[in-house]
Image 1 (spheres, rainbow, N blue to C red):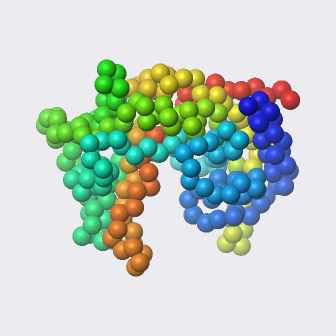
Image 2: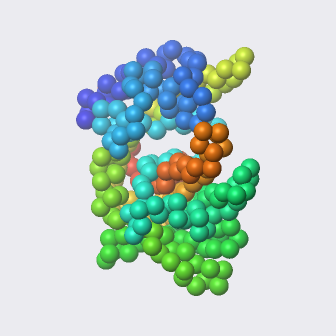
Image 3: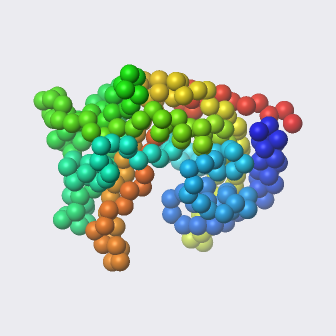
Amino acid sequence: MKENIYFLKKEFSKIKNKGWVIAKSKGNGNVGITFETLLGKERENFPISDYMGIELKTSIDNYSRPYLTLFSATPDGKYIYTTKLLKEKYGWKDSKLEQYKVFYARVTANKLTKINNKFLMKLKIEHQEQKIFLEIFNLNYELIEMDCYWDFSTIKQKLSQKLNYLAYIKADRKYENKKVYFHYKEIDFYKIKNFENFIDLIEKGNIKICFKIGIYHSKDKLGKTYDHGTGFEIKKEDLLKLYDKINITK
């Protein structure tokens, strides 16, 4: 792995020396897609590390979004379409197509989150059952259900396949003539501490679970559910609580 890190650092230096480069895609995630394109890496959606066993995370400096999405994990639940059920039962009307519902929420284990002004949600770690449950309450704090959960084994697999090693890349962004440009200026490498620490950070509220379940507005998919993935997120400033930084001397 050390040689892979040295190699990626060398490739990063080449990209950094290019200065400002034009974005290779549009919309969300274009800073990451552009970096991977410059690396010569094809786009893919596999549950493994992005590059030679190293997960790539890109961030635009001075950009307001404070969270990094570590990975997405569909709930194990007792139902096949758990996230779709959450949308239908606890969601609210879409702003453009009111006949359809959407569901967006960021939920933690250390406090209750109000949803749609009708419900309260929080995460609960059950160590004996080896599960992370989504608890749903009414406004009288009465438990309604906890059918949505993630097995520890699912999380362990995600961490081992995807997040053992991480490269965190910082970039600047600018707009010229209606085009987007990036300058990749810094890269740091990290190694995850351990699984128990990951669970502990969920329990403390440092790692959150974010639901992004909406509907398509395009004519060909009008009203169909899209799920951006149930993301496990951490604030950028908390990264060292999850990872140890790797000092590169070469």
